[in-house]
Length: 418
Length: 80
Image 1: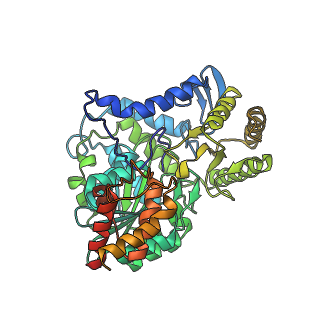
Image 2: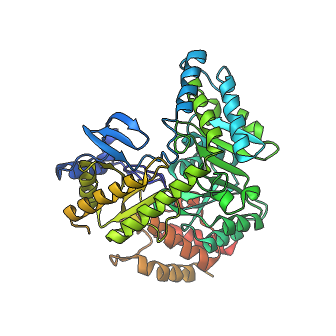
Image 3: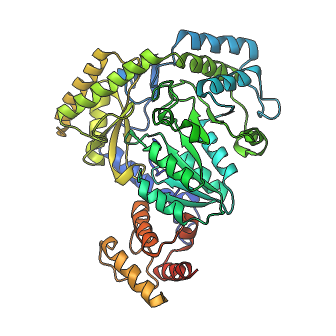
């Protein structure tokens, strides 16, 4: 699931009212929900402006110096001097944008270079870069799974995965979150001769929990399914080389496609798919979200390329990020907060709030005390929970994690949650 | 299994999901009358799938709005 602020990841059918002429009337319920929240007097959690960004972990938000704990900037690459310098150089040498599709005039040397970097990073034969991570899922899923094929996917999948399913006309069969048996039952019932694609995520971003990929990939292979794993929230951090949960679970060779993003650990924007499929390159001609959009600006691919190559040697930063995750998880647990996982499984720690009102109040208390986290609320969340999602950065110091815990304690007591 | 047997079985499965005790008829709507949200739909569909050893894909679910349509669809699927 995603950080979708006010809608579920799975697309909904909004019911219009007969006779209404205003096409916007279908949004009345959500307009009322938002207004209700604002009328209660809280600072709008979905309208935060960062006036100045001081570092990967600090910014001036709504006039206050704030510790950033909800940016997915896991490896803190956004202000890396080499990364920034590569972007400046590309801006000077290649201009501000490509003004074209990858298949026409939009492939520059930098696009090829970043694809080479991805192939090296994942040790795979093919890499294809999209303009966003959303488009990578949308494009690959909708293109490879068509009419008559079956997609078996986790119910807590990200919006970009659901939208890829909706666009591709395959039969879509969801199963209960991380439930190996439920997944197997569904695969078993699919006609043997049908094309099958199993879609999983390494780390699920709502609760920060990891998928049992070892077992799930084995089951998928047993039924002859191809496997796509979205590793957006694990790249650069999980696994010996930072290749994700597929690497730590030792299943990378059995996975057909890995989808990832440049907007988290890599520190810029863009998406990609890597694969060893011998025919993979044909995707460049048949994948509509790849063809019918402008390619990434030269500065973006240059920063991504430099960042990815540096992440290959990031084992010290990875170790420190794990320390941060463990410290924050333990600290919050000791303070009496209810967390999304019993043990820290990723760089995301989800704090479960009693309800939306108290969640919004807690978010506001945190921001006023100088700490930014993501507020996630129903219906975007599993089991309609209200969550404060914390994503740690390798650049958070041990002292900063201590400071974060102090702010949580002070705010939690003020709001009456602990 | 004939339609009446399928109907009886699905009614049994629907019981714990019918939190407000709505009287279920052929025309009862899952969304409007029973007010099933997407997670409830998933759990409810999973139980039916397991009971009849069938798959009701989301594409097929989208065509099913009313209780009677579900019974028809399941009766047909489990006979195939």
